[in-house]
Image (cartoon, rainbow, N blue to C red):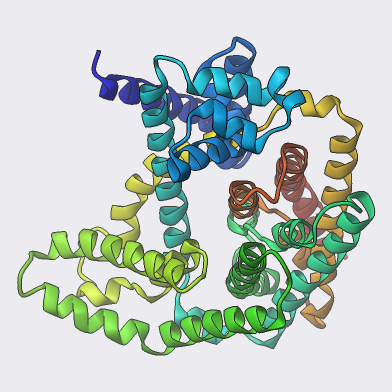
Amino acid sequence: MEPFSFILLELAVIIAMAALGRGLALRFNQASVLGELLIGVLLGNIAYWFGNPLATVVMHASDAQSLVDEVWLTGVSINDAAEKIFTSQELANGVPHELVNILSGPHTPELLLMITTLWLFSNLGVIMLLFMVGLDNSVAEMVKVGSRSVAVSIIGVIAPFAIGFLVSDWLLPDASTPTKLFISATLCATSVGLTARVLEDLNRNKSKEARVILGAAVIDDILGLIILAIVIGIVSSGTVHMGEVARIVLLASAFVIVVLMFGENSVGWLVMQFYKFFNKMQVRLLFPLALAFLMAAFANYIGLAAIVGAFAAGLIVSDNHFGGDKSPSTQELIRPIQSLFAPVFFVLMGMQVNLETFLELETIWLAAAFTVAAILGKLFSGLPAGKGIDRLSVGIGMIPRGEVGLIFASIGKGLGVVNDSVFTAVVIMVIVTTLVTPVMLKWSLEANSKS
């Protein structure tokens, strides 16, 4: 049987399960991302309990990555690599023992090929997702947002970060500073798509509260991505060097400023050049994709997260660049592609949540503390919204973490600074904030309209 057949089978199962999870979530008026995440948790744990090799490697992806990296870099065998990385007790009876048996078996090439495919689809999904977020915003919209939105976004990043660091320092005193910083950065994230949907359902999407929330969310995304870039730099160096932090801040700021100042005009000129060689439909689809991948790669090359570049690319691409005719918009052309790749990311994140960790008291405490910190931090962001605006509704609207929180957590786990217990706690926090926001926001807006 050709190895490619295994890849087709795994993708068919994951995409079908993602569609099932999304359909169930929408049926119960929940965010589609929540359904994809939970179906991944269910699929991953059932397969893991039955001893499926792929599910085992995915569940313990960070340990498996360490093993593969050691083998690749040094040329030693799996067993020798395991002895360098893990203790003798772990190798005698534990997860590393399982991984060594799986990765030294006869089907290892097919398994690694399947894992690589999942990793590729998952990362493409993240890039496409942040590109679409950028497309849904624009530089002009960022300029239009008032001082209230700016203030809300700044407090919405500072407060959760500070509270998250204090909570991490309290509950994880032995954890490294980079780990605590990564947890804090994850709590800064905001996924406003869910809030926008609730505001639209309540016919309040044109209200003052909606304008402040949506405006703040754009700035919040950029601030959150800059913080993520800084934390990744600190993790990479192992310690907090003010010179390194300053370098990353300058790089991130320069990247964003150059993109905002010259990006749209440059894109307009490039599109005109592409029209000389390709037809309009090809340019409208292929140019934005090429730009997103190019800017994601460049951002990663200068030390920023690739998603920063993808988001920036989305900000500077506009349908006006393509003539503004009645052809399908860029969003309409890209969304089906994004809908194929992004669910793989969310299902894969769910598959890495080990339900056995729910039995550990530490995980429950962490999840509860992270959730409280996440909610309180964003509620504070509503304070500077100003007079004539329901501050509580603004704060509630900034609460959901959704896909952005999962992206931050997955990067942390991939870097090895977020362990299984912390990752599970973060996923629980994402689920809770996603579930409570529609209920809280509906109550707050209705209460404000009656007063």
